[in-house]
Image (cartoon, rainbow, N blue to C red):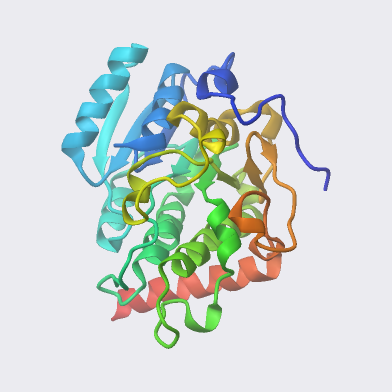
Length: 309
């Protein structure tokens, strides 16, 4: 495959990448859109004319964001719906309530480096359950809506943190190995990349493509368990810069029909052979089709077991 590059880069903003794109008549869902880069992603999509649903845990905060976006863009079609991707009941309620086609699904919500081992009621490690399994179930539940849209895109917000760890299939939920906050975060973000590969392989025939991306280092609530953002100042981005690659992957005509890839700073990332300090690039294990299929099957089993428990 030819590596994809674009005119955009590290300093590009959402306004830059969406310039000239008309999303009138398109519908988008952005998870975790009550703060951080989720807000800027939703704002950019709304500014281009899309009907945007902010899928958030805190609907009061979501309503405030929606009002702000409507005020800044003039787009009144900004809605709020409750969604907690760590709660499978909440995911099912959201997908059951959704009606009509869906053109863009941005899987943006996430948690990072929880200091202590936490589990969902299913017994799943919380970072894996939130960053991967919740969005996996969400996308599967919205598959029919995505297929009905024709040319739908799923955008999986990942991280260079995937370079910390592959998915450890024999002990995903830390039942045997000692829990480590960053290892758990790393494998959850590797799972995000693998989801994009597997979803494209399965759903491209329905006109659905999925790509993963690294937004960059942006000071948000995500770092609340790590003592704040520690990236050197010259490598930091504003929220509008951090959301730029998300928006690019969601709407750019340069990516029509493209799926199963990982982007950073506006371009498809280069593969790296080691963690390189978790700075940039993509680990080949996180885009490996065999790993992607294995994760998909394992994720389906987890969801099925949870339903029958």
